[in-house]
Length: 308
Image 1 (cartoon, helix red, strand yellow):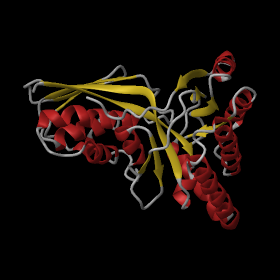
Image 2 (cartoon, one colour):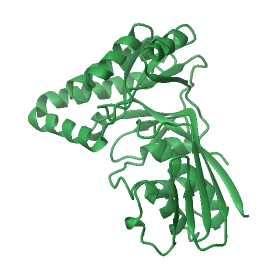
Image 3 (cartoon, helix red, strand yellow):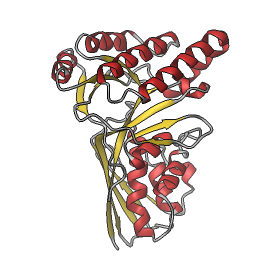
Image 4 (spheres, helix red, strand yellow):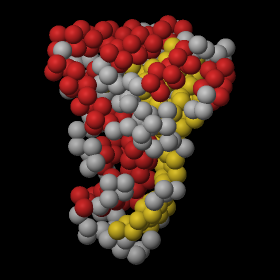
């Protein structure tokens, strides 16, 4: 085999971001925006990585930790699988750095494309988590899990991500809007840690409330209006731990006028919000956010994970 293609979905954190670090649970879902990777043998003793944003050719003897962070995970996958002569082409419909799992999806799709060429009997998930940890050492693996398996994932620290087999309503639509504000996940994590250390008792109460919302959400996937209400309730908790800003608040106000409820998804400080809608209000929510100048799109939860 000389050529292999694999695609993987992006992801949204529906409930529980940040609080998951403090003994709460989180729900993640795969969305129908995907990354596609083509891996091809080239016989030139070079690992080449190409996308619409970068192009690099690296000698396979290069230690992975000195490789540019933008290409390091993909180089690591090829190098660790003994692929010294492979070209990796990445195409993505996901915005980079927006909290929608583009990095994890790229790792999963690259692992899925390179593994068959290598002949090694390893799992896509294990390889992709290893790769992601070359740039995010504390990565839980939850993002890679949902990008690998698709559908809905429940995650709690210290336990393997759990696939949820809850039926997904056919008219559930997630409106994703990008703030366009650059943010640093590490800074947001540190900000939340500061709040936790300064107000431990209050934070513990908020964390328990977040876990309760996650639990109710797992039982409410089929009740779209209730799911939106729970999302809005989750947003109130996120406001209290300091990861919002004026831009995100404005987006939430716009979305809440049309949807069943909306919230920040991901680390906050920028990135995206997600609004819960169905066929009756998806279009108006999308148009309101787009007309306000925010890059927005409709996403659906997909059960299709890594696919070759």
